[in-house]
Image (cartoon, rainbow, N blue to C red; front, side):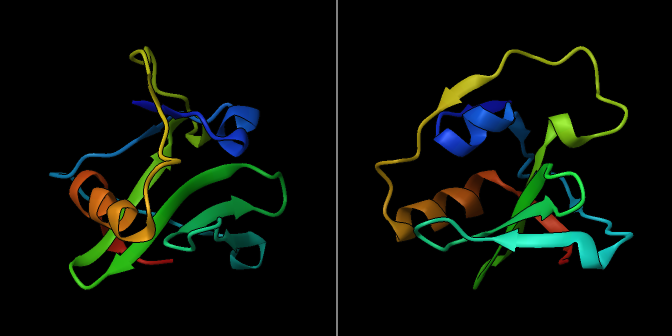
Length: 113
């Protein structure tokens, strides 16, 4: 469990998790409400609901596969109890470092949205 310290994640109360040995799929029932956003380094698509503004998760496609991360607080029902989140600051990474970390730590994606 991680709590990114960037302004966006802090403002949204985001708690993310991933499992490099797991499998993740995002299911979108209203594709017209899905918004993809790319922050400064433009290395991943952050998935947001246009209807309610919730940040659901993120995905990245690389030569080594597709990987994702999920915002636990977007899950219904919310899994309880939640473990303590480790603060995370990725501000010093350049684009190649960020992609490498995501390939190593994010969950392999079963389906790309």
